[in-house]
Image 1 (cartoon, rainbow, N blue to C red):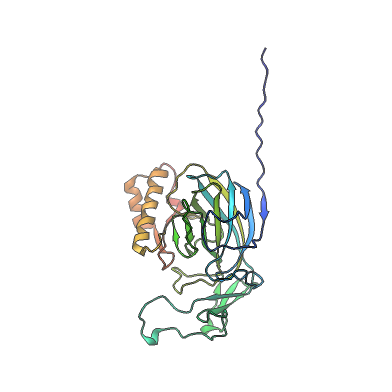
Image 2: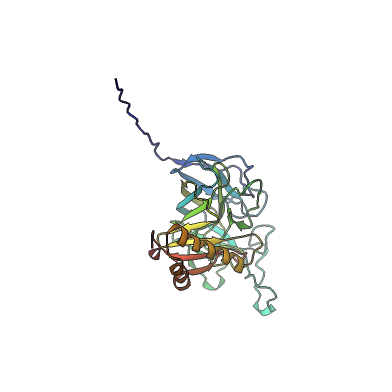
Length: 323
């Protein structure tokens, strides 16, 4: 006698989670208590504070300056060797103020080329080298508070910091960047971009913060227009991929990001170029000769930050499986 057994598979629907942190962190560390546990496919709606710890109400939520991080977020099922995909669904400005550094990071400038010190009372108390900015939430424009010769720009919000807890007990501060992500300060990490992060711990332990209303290539004055943000992301897992470093994808580009603490721009560009070649040759099946020529003729080599991070950005239309 045979018995028919029906096997039914149930897939839990993706959820949207809303959370605002009470505690922010200055390290990418596996030791921090988990802020929220979610599943692959779920979305997270939250807020970040600015690089000095001020929130959407302009209330300081941290005691110290230096890129406070929201998180960590624990993604169920994430294991070492997986890749965490973080799709940035929405980055929204949520207050009318921001600030930047005042001077381009060039050493030994003659006096006539140096930027003057701003009004000591015009910026954050104790940080009189910062220049205050006004954010027009209705028009989505940013401008220096004092006018600065008519400078006026469309806002383009981005996340300066995004990453996971690194290997082992290593707990880097939210200032450098490396294979785990970190303070990459790359202006392509914005709404519509998916960031790919290697996983080193159960749950991945995702952090992000350091919102900018706008930032030029390289973060040449040591900051973007620093401000707080409303953030919506969707997280998914790609199993057993052993990603070596951070990548990103947009509708139009695939991007390899090179970061390493205390490295030169040339050294991190070598990392980004090597990773892009791996991506094209090993993962899409492109012939090596074609991959090298594609990078040499169509890629953009971006300075993410003068602090050392670089990126190689290749148009997606040239990249497909089995080239």
